[in-house]
Amino acid sequence: EPEVTQTPSHQVTQMGQEVILRCVPISNHLYFYWYRQILGQKVEFLVSFYNNEISEKSEIFDDQFSVERPDGSNFTLKIRSTKLEDSAMYFCASSEEFAGYEQFFGPGTRLTVL
Amino acid sequence: AQSVTQLDSQVPVFEEAPVELRCNYSSSVSVYLFWYVQYPNQGLQLLLKYLSGSTLVKGINGFEAEFNKSQTSFHLRKPSVHISDTAEYFCAVTLKAAGNKLTFGGGTRVLVKP
Image (cartoon, rainbow over all chains, first blue to last red):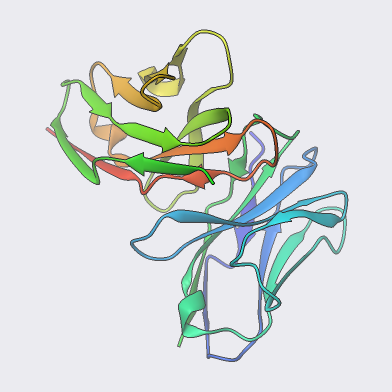
């Protein structure tokens, strides 16, 4: 069964460093998403991506964040200068179509900023 | 803006007993409703969804949920739980009219005891 994969499973970085979180969505899916979950808090939407551009983003997704689909398979989330409060579990998701369609989630990347 | 409230953060239940997880949402426009499950060290997996039609929705693993528009609720039920149902359960909504971002509740941790 096709699945969304994410690498690495755990990333530790120093405050101020850049990190890139990688995701491989399901191959025939057209819509891609990033969510995050700070420990003990709700899963929060960050950004959605379609046709090589951002279709929606949350207030959390400021200039420090960017997304890219550098090739036909990967979908990345970059944080330019990490802060302590960026420590969270980051989930990638993809869906075949738009509204009402199931979003398939990856296992997540735990980001720890020291 | 829409919001989702899961009234119980933890629900202990004995094996083979029934369980109900409560979810209420707030939105000024029509929504699609979802329940996701997260097993330890895994991503979120869709249990079931309500888009339209019959208000009783059946999902995987014997779960079902009922949409109640007047009470803005979407409670999840299972008549007889197994040890393997130990997991965290998330209720989520998306707006029908615009966007595909999922807005999640805080999650309910179900612990099934033998």
